[in-house]
Amino acid sequence: MSEEEKSMEPGSLPEQHQDLLERDLDDKQWFETVYQGDRVPQLTMRAVLMGGVLGALMSISNLYTMLKIGWAFGVAITACVLSFVIWRGVRLAAPRLSEMSILENNCMQSTASAAGYSTGATVGIAFGALLMITGKHVSWTILLPWTLVSALLGVFLAVPMKRQMINKEKLPFPSGIAAAQTLRSLHSKSKEAVAQAYSLVVAMGIAGATGFLKNGNFAWQTKLGLKLPELVPFAFNYRGLDMSKLPGFGMEPSLLLAAAGMLVGLRVSASMLLGALLLYGVGSHELLAAGEIGTPGELIKGWALWTGSAIMVTSGLTAFAMEWKTISRSFTGLGARSQEQADDPLKAIEVPNRWLLVGVVPLALAAIFLQYIAFSIAPHVGVMTVVLSFLLALVACRATGETDVTPMSAMCKITQLTVALMAPKNVVTNLMAASVTANIASSSADLLTDLKSGYLLGANPRKQFLAQLIGVFFGVAAIVPAWYLMVPDQAALEHFNPPSVQTWKAVALALSEGIDKVPVSARWSMLVGGILGIILAIGDRHLPEKIKRFTPSAMGLGLSWVMPFSNSLAFFVGACAVEIWKKVNSKNAEIYYVPVASGAVAGESLVCAMLAIFDAAVALLGRH
Image (cartoon, rainbow, N blue to C red):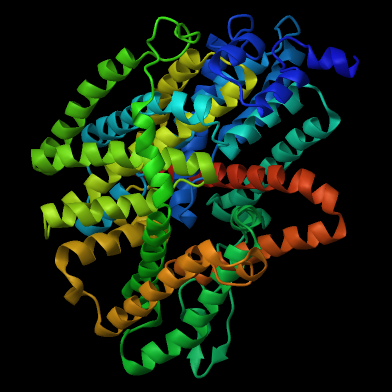
């Protein structure tokens, strides 16, 4: 097949359409030259089912990574690649089945993204922090509607932003562009794209096997010598201290952690290692000698997490405040013309504003009602939470569109600070109000990222919205039972050493119970860390790139003080591996390192999550 024939394959986007997109197309030009949503299959049963199943699995994978390393990874590109490979295998077994069109795959990734990312943003964080504070789980009859309502609200609130941010302003939404390019490459049958797809699948398999060998607890594994240790400790004495007694001081045989380092880059990973070396090499000795911590095991949970949290909170809020132009632009677009005008060329395919009213009003009332019934959050605080979530979702969508970064952590802290003023000394209210903001904002930003892909590919936005809406139900159906099985009790949660959970817990306690609950030395360290976070955030904004790349990352430093040393070391190893790879063969590295890293993250996290669920289910059956 010639290159020209490939470009004109049903469901692909002709190159000239991409050239037109690079110009400033108005709605009519886009509809006439790019739109193909009525001519190509899109919202089909097979696309939705494939996306729902893949997204459900990815939601469990992301729950594990959030608990393990405090990160959730976008699932759109991984879902696109897996769908391509899986469907190719299905067609080998059933040749009569047709190929999925590029718009079917785009709809599939919207469903998968909603299921895998939008529903689990705070299940493992806010409810995890609540479990640590109260020592008991919240009932599923609360968790399920809580997650469902907040995720659906985020999807509906994105509706009025789409026309302004994507059609009119043409914000880049880099991950949306990447997903569209991935789909184009796969459907053009380019050798490079197919090789990338299979490299992701191979990495997924190898990392999954590693996770199984490390976390599997089967007798035959030990008998055959197929059991990897969870940690290889560094056992030596340093300044009279047995370093192996420090929490997580060693190397964890995990491709997931190394792959995460490959994705976040050398600057963040090196900052993590620097912070970990300072904490373990200097801080541990001084704190023990001064009696600030009783045992080495208290290093992180009893002291360092306060400083790490302070660095991340102040840097995040400072970076957020410095984006005042972005925040301002978020609201200037609210007065954009209505899409219901009679001469609107996209009236029949855009999501109508009346859908917004039909969805948002009952969901907002449900969110307020749930907050009151489940956690006794006063109605006026519940109303404030929903209103603030809408405003912050605007900012989240614009920040994601302009930078590909959703400042969820900073926005949650804004909610926590606001709630601390309205309902002081109430840690539960503080946590759960912030969880509403987090889920709504992340869900909105996720939908717009997917709609950007659809815009570039000529998809029907109304059908893509429906796919996202359906995906939420798949995600909730997977994430709620997975949460209880993966984390049956507080001890199981603490075994993860969950950095983000520790941070949310620390901030909620400090705001609700007062700073006097924090050790005196940790208070001073928090002050220093907070100032450092502000300085680093300002430096990130104003320093030249050639200087900035040699300055520490606030996120990296903060995380290194709320997670074990082994995590920081593994991140650094992964980031260094990519740099060496680039030096040896830069072209090869640029092509393969992202799919390889993405596959490794998905493979190990999914297998480890399934093993945790299996172990919990066996223990539960054993009790009965």
